[in-house]
Every structure is written in structure tokens, then in C-alpha cells.
Figure 1 (cartoon, helix red, strand yellow):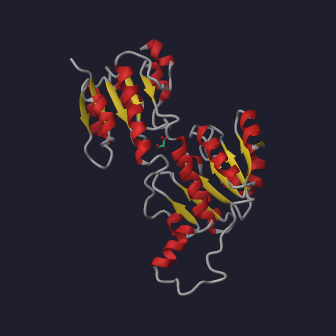
Figure 2 (figure 1 turned 180 degrees about the vertical axis):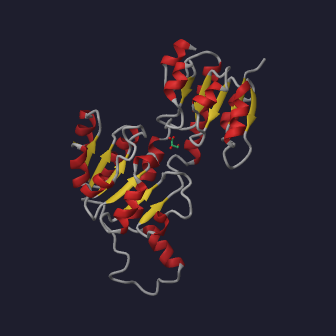
Figure 3 (figure 1 turned 90 degrees about the horizontal axis):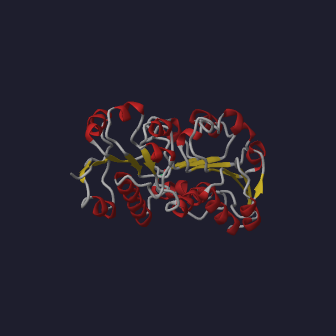
Length: 326
Ligand code: DGY
């Protein structure tokens, strides 16, 4: 009997071509995620689940899935999954690190540039018919070259952003739990405590996973430390930023701008006050969304899933300790 697998959204064909020959597969066909009740019912008979960051995989769901061996998340971030609970139950989790690093760093830097040079505002200005002549004082932004970039988190994506920043002639400060002497030497980065990074940054880019410790790391207190000319860029997880505090800072001119690829919640409701601010650029969580990268992520997620189903350690496990238990 082939193992039973549920894929919670349509994926690039590359993944399906790997999974279909060896599994009994069901794919959720809709654009929106399967409702919670549907997911809870489906997992009852599953051996493997290929999930998205929009699926909440918690103790209740795992309790309903007695045969579940592997959860392969189509993302590098796994904050949608209760990892300790999965480990306790011997369910191995796979994710997709590495392949999306450069693509996500491209977007982070693109958002930084868009906010600094007011590109989105410029586009709206043109489309609204306001461009009547070249103008000395219209849509003046901020220089990127020579500015200080503050990075919170220096994992793969943070490092890739630092590389881009160095080649733009930026000074780069970073704060992370673990110092990275290699990156300091190769890219000229400077480690500093978080408050110093916040105080000195002209641009602050977030690259930390969402954990209980990083939830609302950017809040009223930390925003107050930032320059009122600074711009915040977030391509990590929306929950790292206290959005009410961010809105207040932007609205009161205590922060010059923000560029967010991630929000809390997602999608951002159309009534959210951030959407009223011209100095806030918002993208719909597209950090890894290039054709090539999403295809590589699909192949990686399929490889993790299939290894877990065969009882092998997935190539990219999140909780390898679960494997011994399973
Ligand atoms: C991730 O992988 O965690 C991104 O947020 C989506 O690709």
C-alpha cells in the first residue's frame, strides 16, 4: 500500500512528479488554505503532510493524526508548527533552508530601496496624473550609499543582505546571539548590542525567526530608540513587530518609513491603519517568490517528505531528535 499524503496547496510540478509515483496523494485545490475543520479531518488517515506556513500544525492536529510520520513544511520558517509537540510524538519535520536565501535577500534589499527612494509613492503619483513637470522638491528620498544598515539576526538571509549592503557602500552593524567573526572579517560588519544597532541604523532590516523571545522585539520602546529618519524593513515574520507601535511611530513622524513583506495577521485586513500611510510599503509575503526558488523549495519539500515516509532522516530536518523516536 502506498503511503497517504496530503499537500495543502498546489505546488510547482517538480514536487508532484517526485511524490505521485510513490504515494497516494491528495492536493488541496483551492487558492485559500483548507479550513481548519477540513485539515483536521484529512490528517486522520495520513502518513505524511506537506504543509504551508499558513497551516497551523498544533497538538490538536497531531492528536488527530495517529499515523503521521513526517510533516514537510514548504518554507524555511516553521513557526506555524508546534515543534516540541511533534518531537514528543516522534513526528519528523522538514523545511527548506538555503535555497531561498538569495531570493529573499533580493526582496529585502528591493524593499529597502523602494522605501528609501519612494518608488511605490512615485508610481502612485504618476498613475494619479500628478506628474506635470520635473520638480526639484518632489518625492525626495534618502541615500542608500554611505548610510548605516542595522541587521537584527545574521543567519543566511541576514548575511546575504549584508553582502548586498556592503557592495552599495553601506556601513553595516548587526546584532545576533552568536557573533560571526568570519562575516565581520569578510564583509566588514560590526557587531553591536541591540540598542546600539537600533540607535545608529538609518535602515533596520529584520532577519530573526519568530519565537516567544522575538515576538514584538520591535515595539514602542525599541522604536523610540531609532532615528526619526530611519526606515524599518521586515522580511522575517510579522509577529516580530508590534504593528500598533509601528503605526504610531510612522504616523507621528518618529520613524521615516517602513517596508514590510510580512505582517501580523496575514493577509493584512484592508481596514488596517498601516494601509493609510504613504510611507509604508507593503508586499504580500513574496520574499521567496521567484519561479526558480519556489521550484527548488518544492523539490526540497518533496525530498524531505519522501525520506520521512521511508523512515529515513529527511535531508533538511528541523527536529532530528524526533527521528530516533519515530
Ligand atoms: C519561509 O520560507 O519561511 C518564507 O517566509 C516563505 O518562503
